[in-house]
Image (cartoon, rainbow, N blue to C red; front, side, top):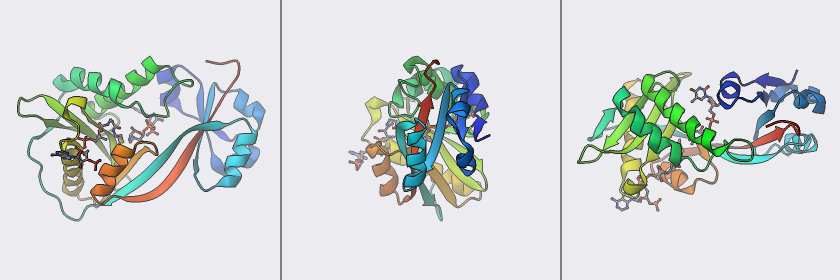
Length: 231
Ligand SMILES: CC(=O)SCCNC(=O)CCNC(=O)[C@H](O)C(C)(C)COP(=O)(O)OP(=O)(O)OC[C@H]1O[C@@H](n2cnc3c(N)ncnc32)[C@H](O)[C@@H]1OP(=O)(O)O
Ligand SMILES: Cc1cn([C@H]2C[C@H](O)[C@@H](COP(=O)(O)OP(=O)(O)O[C@H]3O[C@H](C)[C@H](N)[C@H](O)[C@H]3O)O2)c(=O)[nH]c1=O
């Protein structure tokens, strides 16, 4: 078998969703793909051979992704940053549901209302510590949520889950403040690397990360194949 089930995603989106195991690509057949509603593959953007193989099997481009890493040698505590609590969940859900418009979880593969719920659920899970481990908030001088960042620790490295700034607060340094708070979170955990992933199209986010010294490490493509009789 060359496709592994994505269990959480399949349950959440009520579709049979699988992901190609690239080490088993030589075994992949249209018949195996057909057993799934949606098959995903994430490939290095320079791997033209895999790109061509997957294209010939009916996969199409869904999105490009960039991975970055920030070396955290020193950091400073950011004023105005709080740990999100369950009471913040309703407002965080509302903010997150409308913010991540650049996403591979998009039409025609995913219904927009479910995509909105997906990012709402992601940030709720971050507050509860059930997926990402923590969610930090930037509060404005009235105590309103200006932005949030979620973080997790995996493989001795810190990872940013979601970063979002309320539209009314953009372009005022809140994104920078949250990124610096993430660097501080990383350092206080005794870690030295902060990993970030974002869409290749997300120039605003990429500019922010690069401005703060993040290094672009890899670029990838997400390819999807939907079965004709599904969704
Ligand atoms: C891991 C992930 O989640 S990746 C996805 C990132 N999130 C999203 O795409 C969600 C939607 N987008 C957003 O929430 C926001 O646009 C973000 C997070 C990308 C950026 O947040 P912002 O708070 O606007 O960032 P910030 O203000 O620090 O920087 C943005 C611009 O404002 C400028 N700026 C910063 N401080 C100030 C200031 N005090 N006065 C004027 N301009 C300022 C910056 O120089 C920057 O300009 P540039 O991009 O032209 O260089
Ligand atoms: C909430 C939650 C999610 N999962 C699963 C579901 C998916 O299989 C993965 C998340 O996939 P990812 O490729 O990370 O998703 P995105 O493409 O939306 O994320 C990128 O863009 C975002 C805007 C953000 N920058 C993110 O950091 C990027 O990776 O996780 C799960 O198993 N359990 C959950 O609770």
